[in-house]
Image 1 (cartoon, rainbow, N blue to C red):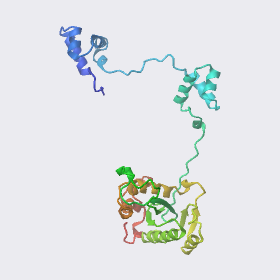
Image 2 (tube, rainbow, N blue to C red; image 1 turned 90 degrees about the horizontal axis):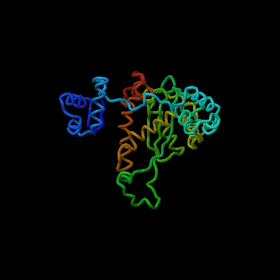
Image 3 (tube, helix red, strand yellow; image 1 turned 180 degrees about the vertical axis):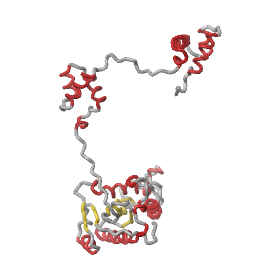
Image 4 (cartoon, rainbow, N blue to C red; image 1 turned 45 degrees about the vertical axis):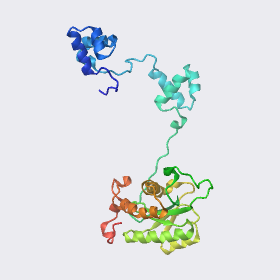
Length: 315
């Protein structure tokens, strides 16, 4: 039993009440000694007399019967009309029921919102069979850091002029099959930075035994540039772009960015941007080599790379 903190009588003390009454004490005396009312004493005395020791246990406050509750037939009528996309008030008028009764029935049925009647689109998940078949690339803009911010210190001095510290750009690349990830801080999100990151990422994946075949990006101007197309061609890669305004197509990169933000970029109050960048590499090493990944059965990404391919690298 989970008695509330101010409970005066528990099953054990209720048995003591019965025992003292049997010992000759009056109802008033027992009530005074336990700090409860005579009515409560008589209640436990009578329950014990009728049911024995089981009668001293707590009972649910739910009534044993609910006569006003809607019948199953009425509930079925409400559901049928709702599935015809009738509103609650319209159903109430047609069946001659109070609107509140119909509303309660719809909540019990999980149909209180019309959206519940719409079929949910099937979630299509995909995963490439082998590392390197597809690398997702994306960019996340991060505010530069020059001292701990107002969210921690509460000091907004110097923020009223609207001039921030500027931005730096986290470029990420994550392998579709293994979730092995590579990141780098770049000065911007323009074509030169995108090409430099692509070259660095491909070199890093190659060092880990992953031969990249395809690259997926969004439709940012850097990825649509001739310079990026030329870099893709020079590495004999296929370039896939996401459908416009459909970030879930590149969902593995989007999800990795959220994990990076939560576990690294915003996890600690860094003093400077350089401190944050310095902390990125140890975090990424742990992500690739030790952190369990739910999408690959609780194993780290590096576990999906054949050991013969690692060329002595483990980071």
